[in-house]
Amino acid sequence: MEIVPVSDGRGLDRFIAFPYDHYRDDPLWVPQLRRDMHTLLTPGKNPFFEHAEAQYWTARRPDGRTAGRIGAIKNDAHTREHNDQVGFYGFFESINDQPVANALFDTAAAWLRARGFDTMRGPMSPSINDECGLLIANDGRPPSLMMPYNAPYYEALHRHYGFVKAKDLFAYEGGGAVAPERLLRLSRRVMERAGVTLRPLNKKRFTAEVELVKALYNRAWEKNWGFVPLTEAEIDHLAKQLKPIVVPELVLFAERAGEVVGFGVALPDFNVALLHNRSGRFFPGILKILWHARRIDRARVLLLGVIPELRGRGIDGVLYAQVWSNCVKHGMPQGEGGWILEDNAPMNKAAEQLGFRVSKTYRLYDKPL
Image (cartoon, rainbow, N blue to C red; front, side, top):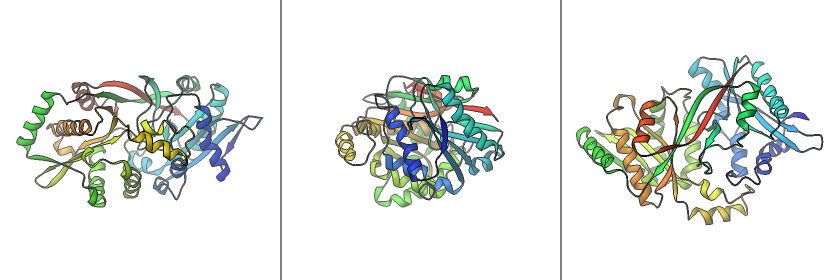
């Protein structure tokens, strides 16, 4: 077996193709569109690489077949934000073979060590603002939109290599025909007392609404563990990707005295449709995706944040209640919320009070270099 660096388009195609073969018979794996993976991984197409660098490798058997893959990521935005020497690995996939996994991890570690990093953290594919974490506990459902998936034996591959837990991330499953009446009453009182009003996203003013998100996002999440600010270009890129599936009533802004003080974002769980396009190819796969998209009955609550000055005043509950009610109205009474850091006590408590339960646990690992 040899570890081969990705150095051209053919190598990148091989890197992208491996999971489609690896998970071919796994009914829980959700194939993303291959062209979207090309965009995610390619400098010049993904603005993440305006402040980051990555190298990818595949593990190749003597018969030419791929046995695994990995990426190593140097994220200058993280380094500036946290002033540490943490580098990252991501996009890890491997057959159930410890020597193959070790060779991949060793290769990524050597690349990071040569650039002065003292810790390798991941999986982040490619950052904490994208798919991150290794799935270590699952309720038997496929992953929700923009959440990762991996084979159960990956945990042992990490443990035997010497990785240690850095942080766990929780995803919550819940829902129902209506939000709890107690929550609705509380929400109404909060809105009246604090002078808070809610409004949905105006898709006709989509560019202006994205500007509001830019102003709020980094303020609302800046103190979270591992947080890395999104650049304006990254937010624009994400908004462009998500615009076709946005339902305006599922993107809510909380306003007080004419100022936006919080927002909640839920999206139809498009993985319900993507699950049926096993090849990941745009054509004719898009026809299957569009057919099954009509039957999406789940949502993913992607973001919910309030500016630091107004936290603890119940505004998050207002957003929860209305986002939930609007999801029900659009035929999505069930869904997933998260992820939430394991030690974010207020958010975990709020999810539990809503009747949500932890459905999946993802783990981020560290390995000293």
